[in-house]
Image (tube, rainbow, N blue to C red):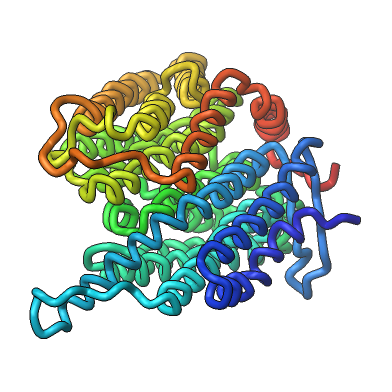
Length: 521
C-alpha cells in the first residue's frame, strides 16, 4: 500500500523542523525550494488517488475509533485547492517575506539608533535565515492542519486538526503581521478558538449519543431527539464563526488584512471555507433532517452576509481590508448554496470554494505586489499601474472576474449553479420567503461587481500617482504562481466537469439516501 494520504499529511508535519534547519544553515533560497519540494510532493500524493474519485485509508486509533483519511466527492475539491495554494504560495513567499522582514528590521534599527541620520545597516544573514526558517516551519504545519481537517473521518480527529490549523496561523499573524499584530492575533485566536470549543461540545455530544465517533457509523436516527437541537446549534454556531458569517465575522477583517500577505492568501481563500466543508460533512451528511429544518435560517444569514460584506468592501480605502470584507461576502455565497437543499446548489457551493480559492488568492497576491512595488495598499495613493505592472494587472483582472462570476472563469459556473439550485428549491416548495431571500441575495452580485470593478479602476487605470513612476512587476517567484492560478481559473471555468463529475454523484447520494454511508461502499 502506498499510503498516499498518510504521506500528504505527515511528511509536511514531520519535516517542518528540517525546513527550519535547512533555511537557517543553507539560506533562504535552499529553504524555499526544500519547502516547495515537500509541498509539491504532498500535492501529488493528493492528486494521484483523486483521479479515481474515491480513496480511503484507515488506521486503528485507540477506543475513539479509527484514524481515517478520506478522499470522496466532497473532500477532493477542498483538499486539492488547499495544497495547490499552499504549494505555489511557497515561491511567492520568498521575495515577499524577505521584503517584509527587512522592512521591519530597518524600522526597529531606526527606533533604537541615537540619531535618525545614521545609516541603517542591512539585516544580518543569520537573522534573516532564522526568521524565514520559522516562517516555513509554521507554514507547513498550517497547510497540513487544513488538509487533514477535510480528510478526517472521525469526529475527534476532525476537531484535533481543526485546532491544529489555528495554532500555526496564530503565530504567523503574531510574528509576521502588520499593525497591532499581537492584539489582532489574540482576537483571531479568541474568536476562532471559542467557536471551536462550542463545536467540540456538539461533536462530543453527537458521538456519545450515537455510540460512535466514526462518521460512517453515525446515524441521525440513533441520536437522542432531545439532544439534536443542542448538537445542531453547537455545530452551526461553531462553524459560522469559522466562516465569518454575520454576526460572527468581527475577527476576520482584522486578521486577514493585517496577516502577512501570503498567509492572507491562505486564510481567506482556503481556511475559512473549511467551515463550509464541515457544515456539509457534519450537518448535511450526518444530520440530514436537521439540515433541512435549519436551511431557511441559514439562507437568511447567508443573504445578510453576502450584502453586508459586499457593502463594507465597497467603503474601504485599504486594498487588503477590502479583500477581507469581500471574503466575508463570498462565504455568504457559499452558505447560500449550502442552504439550497438541492444537488445543483450544493455542487455550486463546493465549486464556489474552488473559484474563491483561486480568484481571491490572485487578488491577495496582487495586494502583496502593490505593497512591495508601489509601497502602499491605500486606494487614494494608487492609480495608473496597468502600464507599470502589466502582468500583475492581467492576473488581477482574471481573479476579479472569478469572484464576480464572469465567464470563462470558474466563478461563473459556481455562482450560476448555487443560485439556480436555490431558485429551484424555492419554486418547488412554493415558498414566498425563499423567493424573496433569493431576490435579495441577487443584489449581492451587483455589489460584488461594483467594489471589484471600482477597485481595479482605482489601482490600474487613470493617471500614475506621485511616487509610482518606478513601480514594476515583481520577480518570477511572485509572477509564476499568479500566472499558474490565473490559467487554472480559466481552465476550470471552461471544463468544470473535471470537478462536477465527482461532486454531483456525491450530492445525489446524500440527498437521495439521507445519511450517507460512503465509507462502507
